[in-house]
Length: 283
Ligand code: OAD
Image (cartoon, rainbow, N blue to C red):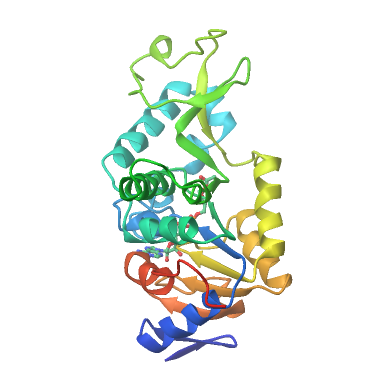
């Protein structure tokens, strides 16, 4: 056992799982906040850990409006590469367990910092499986499993001219400026519809996330270093409103001291254990 602040963190064991599950059993509303760690076991690189993107690349050269203005070809080349990496990845057991958790009961909101689209793919897979069981009718719960994507998506693009945002999944030809993606409506250059350093998040998405935080009885935080704002404040806002924090991360984070339960564990094993088969909270 290790004590970090006032919270005793224990290796991922049955007693810890049971204490986390009891919190979910008693909760009417659950907010789930995820970061890159939830996708690590799918093969998607994190940002700050070993082999992380910001260890390999310089964020200011690739993930800022200035970088895009300076060299849109280089930025699209990098985002095109990230898109191809993610395309070869599959949602892991944590994504699927969270999708089933959200689809199987009311009051669960998934908010992610990730732009890899794996939560959405897990939600669609869960809906398809449920529709298969129900003879083709997709249950309404499946929509609840779709996440709020705070930082956007690798698979959406936004026009730098008319501002239109839309799904954009085709391969990117970054061999020359002329071949970069252009808007079908106004012809201007498209950019990845992701939040870059120095940019504000979509106020509607951020408002929805903080509203969910204010209502949450429990906030499950999975796979984030909790160092990037305003996303990290969503968990602290939930805690300030009385929510209990459950954290899943192999490493301690700034949120560990306010967590009721902090599992030093990997998402794909711990998350199914603590949210699996929670279709309806016990009365
Ligand atoms: P980070 O790379 O900063 O942190 C990843 C966290 O996941 C770390 O705390 C790891 O310990 C943990 N982790 C690693 N493997 C894990 C596993 N198998 N299971 C559970 N946790 C694991 O990524 P984020 O916190 O998501 O911003 O970074 C936040 C934002 O910073 C990103 O959204 C991105 C980046 O700049 C934008 O794209 C705007």
